[in-house]
Image (cartoon, rainbow, N blue to C red; front, top):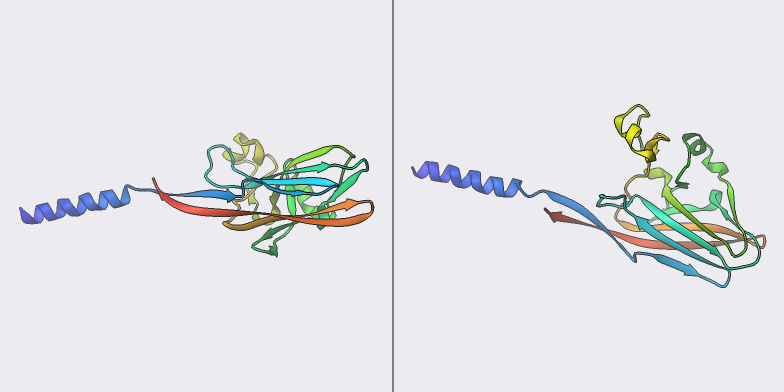
Length: 184
């Protein structure tokens, strides 16, 4: 009888320990990072897909406060992780063919007084999905064959190159992403 009680106790303790799943939950600080000058306002925000506990892309907003056109030079703009350049950025709607030509990334004009709002993500973190997979057929983000990858914990930055009046201006905006493991 004592042996049976010991076995039941071990089983009960084991089920309590294994019954608690651990979930990784990501938060960002600040929620939105802003660079503001007389000529422009730039905002970045790490974004989560609906139902996800992690971040996989950024919402980027660039407001041109001038009367003149400015341009984003994507070929000179970078994703920066913990202070080190970590590759180029991609944007929502990018095709697999455009990925091959990323070094020839376009200059995106923003007319005076206008705003550009775009979803961007680090190209080094993308995940590839077969075009015939069930996920690719049901998730519109995967029609191109790839999807943004999980932004890691740490200092995630976008270094944006703007062309203003023929001169390149760089702004680095940083969001600290923290990952916590929580028992469910």
